[in-house]
Amino acid sequence: MARIKVRFNLGKGANYMKWKVQYPNGNVEYHNPTEIQLIMNGCQLRNHKKTAEKIFNGGEKVVCAWVLCDDIIIRKHSFVPFDIVCDKIRYNPRVQPNWLINGNVVDNVKFERIGSVDYGLFVVCEE
Image (cartoon, rainbow, N blue to C red; front, side):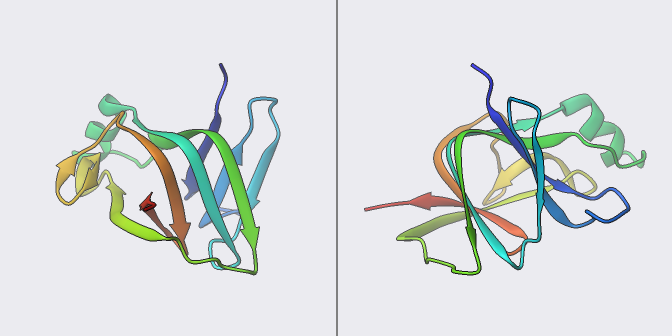
């Protein structure tokens, strides 16, 4: 089953520093993190390890990480607080070539729900 692919766009141009949402049918959307909130369900944190290691070792930054999700809700201009935000998810291959939560590697780990707050991603836990 094809899944939705979400990543942060760092390529120069009009969509610099925006969330890129790519749908299985090929449609692509870019969203300003300060204007929207992403709610992703059925998620997996993906990382192209060899590419990330090259960046970590001083190589040029290229796309190497994304979130795969089964479903996405994009809330515009009306931020609804999450019930409980469990942990911040971090990714910067210059610092560590892995997805991290509280210093632990979480590459390929699956989460029920991940949400965005501005430029950050968080695991969303509900009671």
